[in-house]
Amino acid sequence: MTDTAGNHIDEGIAAGPAVLLLSNNGSVALRTKAGALLRASTLGEFFDPVRDRSANPFGIRTLYDQRSQRFFAVAAERGGGANCSSQPGTCYSRLLLAVSRSHSPGSLTGADWHFFSLDATTDNGVRTEMWADYPSLAVTPDSVVIAMQMFPFTPPGVEPTADSKVLKIRILDKSRILEGLASPHAIS
Image: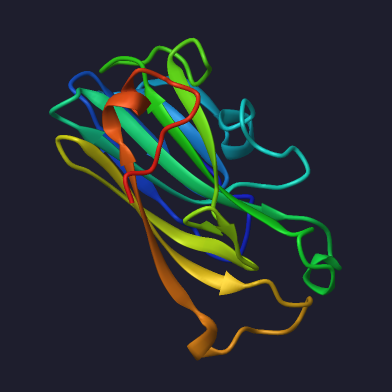
């Protein structure tokens, strides 16, 4: 697997009963537990059903949930153009979520995965001018929990100040996600 997306590699591995899901900022792969490659794609191709094709997903995290016997993956994306920070409302940030339809997906496509795109800029339905990075992922018996570091949209070359960064947590209804429902409602 190679990383083609950026300065650092966000690597991950999730182990199910029969297959492994490996990921980094550039690619996603399914392998047998003996190491044989089953399927591979770029991170962008994996999230094609829900991503903006002009943006590249990044910061992928993966896990296997023993209780539901499903793989979960989350990545972030942002875009809107180089000047969007000076034009409020034109920048966007999304969380891209994927959940396998079984404990042993045979592909990296919609045939074996449910895909979701969640607006990361909103807080309780109110739009902010912040974008998500460093997503993390956890599951409970009833919820999918995604935490992320939020940064203000700034012009190119301008770094946000330390006091302008915030932590955001999204708690999603796990049963809706497992069913592949189009809008996984946030619990909080």
